[in-house]
Length: 283
Ligand code: PAF
Image (cartoon, rainbow, N blue to C red; front, side):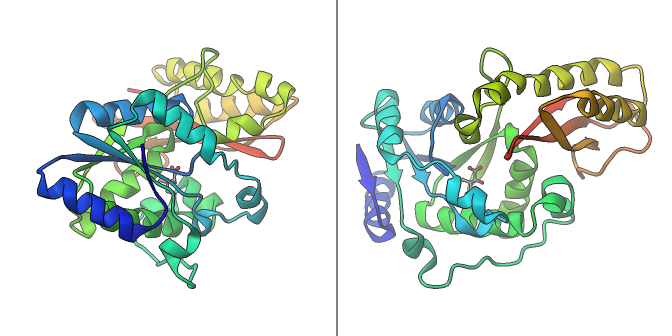
């Protein structure tokens, strides 16, 4: 497996692939790879000759320093997992902070037509500027034909689509279904940090979302939101940060349901000091 630690070597290799008319898929990650990432990579391998996987914990998208410091970094295990998927068709780019940012570790400010002011944008200051900065930079370095993002970070997926449209970046952004463990918890690199009792409690999040889907067919968004708030108020371990039913195009909270629009429910929950997010399509 080819592992590149700097952009010059990677760029040279991508030039060779391009000259041979090979197509390149791309899965950007922050490492601590799990089956959710594997499913994105497999999707990429179906549709491209090669798949580049970046492994980079991007400092500019963290508003919480402790979260950045504690974010799992498991490069050797990540490479082992990737080898089980494909030793030949996967290219790894695992840069240092200075390879990406030089000595200026800051993010550019982006406007995503208001998408950035909802949900994660409200609760994580500067997060989507950091995401936009790194993804744009990675797209410029890797130059993929297609890039794959999970729907677990649905708002991020929408924002990347907007970024690509606004900057006319020649890459097709593909959204992939949420990958869940058997008990329903959405796969996330942060799950490995959950203490046992919190890990056992965490499937409650998806259980609640499934009930939300049922209730939303009969009840108003307001009533369903109120019900969710009460469920979490009673819960001993999980603390609700937000629950929102939003229209998928604008991500704005729904005030009055319309059967012409498509809705999704979004949730962010603290399990101890670990923040988990999830979402579900409602109609
Ligand atoms: O979803 C993630 O893991 C990150 O936000 C991404 C897209 C790799 C950018 O750092």
